Amino acid sequence: MTWTMRGLRKMSLMLCAAAMAANAYAQQPVDVRLTVTAEAAGPRIEPAVYGQFAEHLGAGIYGGLWVGPDSDIPNTRGWRNDVVGALRHIKVPVVRWPGGCFADDYYWRDGIGDPDQRPVRLNRWWGGVSENNRVGTHEFMDLVEQLGSDVFVSGNMGSMTPRDMSQWLEYMTAEGKSTLTDERRRNGRDKPWKVKYFGLGNEMWGCGGNMRPEYQADLHNQYATFLSGSVLRVASGDGTQNDHLIEILMERSRKHMDALTLHQYTIPGGWESKGQATGFDAERWAKTLDAAMSIEQRIKAISAIMDKHDPDKRIALYVDEWGAWHDPEPGTNPGFLYQQNTLRDALLAALSFNAFHRHTDRVKMTSIAQMVNVLQAMVLTDGSRMLLTPTYHVFDLYQPFMGATPLKTAIQTPKWRQGDVELPAVDITAARAADGTVHLALVNLDPARPARVTTNLKTGKPVQGQILTAAAMDAHNTFEQPRELVPATYTAQAGASGLALELPPKSIVVVEVPAP
Ligand code: AHR
Image 1 (tube, rainbow, N blue to C red):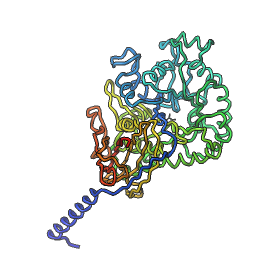
Image 2: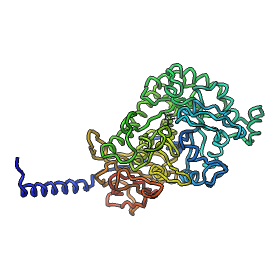
Image 3: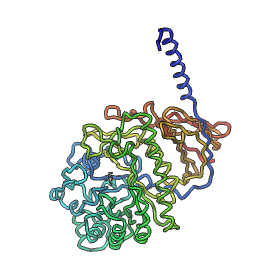
Image 4: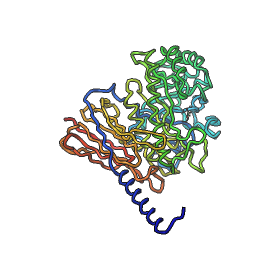
């Protein structure tokens, strides 16, 4: 075929017209219909669903949260004032500590007494770096007191004896006089601390000791027997889609537990090649959100097994590790799991919360991995500098859902397709707070098309809210531009038939509808 100049010009005009038409199509909003009822969809959303996880990993503790009392970085007894202040703002309900994999290699006595005399260990899981134990039990408890959070201690069942475990709990929580409580007092703490949650190991199928479910169940029962007090006993559960593990734990250990756990990470490209935290394409965007939404399938599958053994739903499911796991930022220690955090991560967090809200009968606590500088963090630090990530802003926007009652809703939403992934255009959650206010959160997953959501909510006047969105899928904050992606004010229109919301592509909108 021979191309003439005229032919080429004509062809390029046609292509231009087609591109403009496609672009105009992309700008057309899709129509979504949402009906919100007054009926509760389940028990209240426990505030603990908005929990956090802080492991001795990379700069998750040292540098990110803890700089020591002698640091030039402003701190309170060693904990950074800027980071603690930011976390106080989002009312962190619970902090899980000290791991993760680190927990099953942690001996609590290493972290008490004179800081200068504490042993130095190698952190075998995370880069083999020296762990000087400057942050131990007393320091961690100080952090949670500064934050106003509940305590989730992840106990070592992989390499510590049941006697050591029960003595740690006695040291922390016992009132009466004993050699251990005297030691705690000598170390500066008179009153016992309240430990609300106590984990019996972490990922026992892997870094917790590579155990068979049957062996773990026996061990769990043995260790749990010696845990006294009112602590909630948390069995280490699934992380590999292992139904058999849940069956065995529920069958053999349910009398000795108050909750079991699920770890589910969103790893866009799989373990071998996870993919970059920034600079991804629309296909990766879609795959990531699809993978994030699949957490709901896992929650349903685990709940179905739990229902067989525990129809009264006494035992809770704690999703105590979730979030995005990307490739580490180039130039950082791969063992430190330091990654950027973009608008995509923000949507992932919002979609996860929406899913948790749909399963409040079982999901009573979660902790995102992790709080600072590790994986899908709230805060990133660089020396004395700090930035708040898009994920932090989602925790902030969703604050009104803590303690609210989820409402039954019906949504008619078109799907959108990217490659071989098909997803709903819009995902939502609705809940009623104690004062009758209805809180709505809406996520437009489509990176290209806006959505117009009409609802049955009669308000008579526009309602206010906040929006998190950006032009780029990988919009993020940097130490140079820490406010590149922050929430903005949003107004939803009253509409003739009910509240109407315009959602830009790739956005999260949270609005508050006053009680009638
Ligand atoms: O969060 C990082 C690690 O992921 C945790 O230590 C472990 O429990 C999980 O595999």
